[in-house]
Length: 234
Image (cartoon, rainbow, N blue to C red):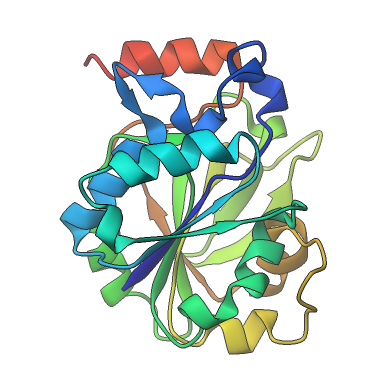
């Protein structure tokens, strides 16, 4: 199993914190978010991790160079942001044909994800991937899903005014080995694509949902950052 940590974003909603710091290096009690993810992935047994960089890439490179698990990490610099799906297409040779976790490095996750691995191994036979889900107090700002009795995603509503519930996509995916060929192969390298708008809608009825066993937060604003600091103490 491989993993891709998406870490290139500008973090504009998190200003002024990100005026001098990339959001993936925002600390949770002295440990950057990126470091928390690297340690979690290594504990899961992942030995190949790709990290894309762009904003303050020198800081991210310096952090990776000093990390004890740097031997497991491949880094790629994006001179132009490609979007979450565009990055996956550009780096297809890293993950095509393999099981691969795809993670936004600016999210805070308390779970060790072991239960997600088990859910993926026992997923519905008609699904190609497993998606982390969480209950959100602000469903209008998230991608909201509906599930059938087998916990398979049957509807996906991306940031709509009146979403049908509060069970949200955490944008953390565990892809099976067929995902690139089934959903990405017709898209062009070097173009900008997003998972939430260009890929996930095509995956409906092929996604196994897994509700996270612990707190899960998008560290997108100063307010959510303060909330993560509070939660991380519990």
